[in-house]
Structures are given as structure tokens and as C-alpha cells.
Image (cartoon, rainbow, N blue to C red):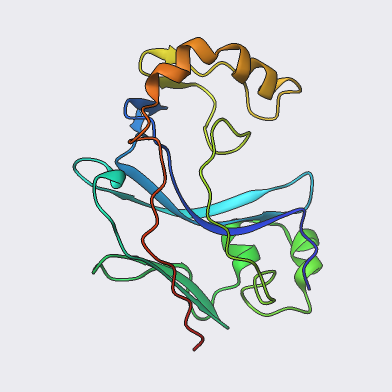
Length: 184
């Protein structure tokens, strides 16, 4: 049933300590968990935000994904799970796609296109066209590119002198203690 250019389930935190986007703190104490999906010209997401007083990278945490035939939810440490799509809901409608897009996954289940096998991918990225909203300010410097701009990556690289100082070796790394997958 998958007809997506972009289909991903994930957790994301930005390692930038002083990142403000549209008046909100998007720095290293802000975490998002959710899904990103859509055909090439209409990619949308649904996420849940969580914050900690300091930084997500200060301690190991337990991130749990409950991926069931009729629901997708995330749990962090010992908190209650938060649903991206709860039983009875249909993911494409919850994300806000119109019926013409939802028909791409019409033969799938309520969590389509995530009702087939997927890979687990862990990574640390910088820049990116969708992970940093436009008009963000990082340590007093405006984001040097616009999302989906033709030369976004070039502008990001050309502004290296401003953003590279906001990274530190320890605080800008990803540490994984273990990954466990359990089939239900």
C-alpha cells in the first residue's frame, strides 16, 4: 500500500542549545516524536513534543515506539504513551490529507502507509529542508536558508562560520546504549 516519497516514523531533537523558532524553544531540551509522510509535492507530519529542564543529551533515555495494526504511539522513559494515531482513527485524515491523497492508501489499514515493513534508522543530521522551520534563530543568528529553497544546502554550508560554533563534540553527538525490537 505504500505510495510515498517520504514515509518515516521517528524521534528528533536538535542539538542546538539556543534555537528559537517562531517564539518557541526548539533547542536541545525539545524532542519531537512522530510520523512524516506524503507524495512528492505534499509531505505532512504529525508529532508530539516533549521537553526536559536541561538537555536530552545529558542522560540516556528509554524511547518506546508502540507500532500496532491500528495505532502508533510513543513513550519516553516512564511517561504514559502518547498517540500519533489512536485506535479508530485513520492516519491520513488525522494528518490532514484530502480524500484524493488518502485514496493512495485506500487498500491499507488505518495506519497506512505504515502497515508494511520498514527499516529502523538512527541518525544525527544537520540543516535539512524540513527539520528546522523557516525564521529560526540559532544563538542570535538567523537560519541562513529557506525550506525547499533551490540552493538551501549551499547556503547552509556557506554560513558554516556562524553555525559551527554552536556545536560541541560531546553535546552534538548521538549516543545509543542499545536498541531492542520486540514483536507483539
